[in-house]
Length: 387
Ligand code: NIG
Ligand code: FE
Image (cartoon, rainbow, N blue to C red; front, top):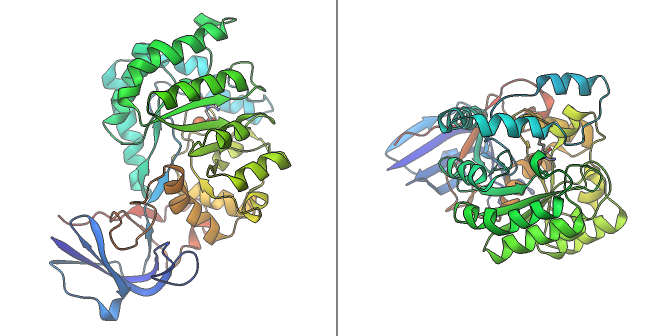
């Protein structure tokens, strides 16, 4: 079954061989989808015939957003913690414990319903690929359950048993790390593509460099790819550890030294920035310009979670990246699509080159620039194709 998508006022392909500049822009474009993949891209006037036809009437079309960082398996909510933060209470990771309690008490049906609701919310806003982490179970059985549920909605599942040291292990962090790297990893690895760790010596609840290394090395030995939460609350070893171990991505990157930037520039690890977190915690925004100017690959993601950013909107991330982090609209759109794909080491999403998955985001606007120009307006949605 083939479908012609025509009337595209501006097509972002992220493929320089198909169009102008780093976004591979094609004006007045059309695109043919065949069996779920992009089969043809070009000027609407030259489009071939197809079985079905969808006219988007001058709107802009871009690759579906790739949200490479989200925590969607949880119960409860923490709006009171958010309210306190807005009046000056700093975030230190301590609130995670209350979500862990609520999540452990919840049945599979409750967790599944919340997870599906959030994924649907994302899809309705143009996100077509999402990574989902565990990390609110923190027992072998509860982490395994979270990953099993996550696997029902995405292939990008991440084991985050090393999110914080849970209450029952207080003062016994090394025993907890032994659990995470031993029986918990054994139970979770079959359900996960990635392993992640909250490497943050500035938090009394998270993990130092040595513990983080142990978690990542054990995960790698179990066949998982590596991701790191690093340098969110203060300077720390997360970024350099991620680069040294060849992690696909290090996420947050709010407090970076010159050596951290140099390491990222010389390695293959993507720097994933999560500006919704700074918005929701009143932390300073990461210095995106410094990273981009050093040649680092930058991704944008929501970090959607009940603590530091309960937003599923990639469009909000793009707007914040432009307004608060001085990324150009083109850099921000690239980072939210191709950058996210790089952070997940995926070549089939994040662009609309021939053969890519036909994951399309359509804007109620003539240009991608409107994502930042019209903040808070629900312009983006996933284009559902016939067949
Ligand atoms: O990415 N920093 C650690 N983990 C999450 C927050 C989790 C929470 O507070 O519930 C984050 O910001
Ligand atoms: Fe996170």
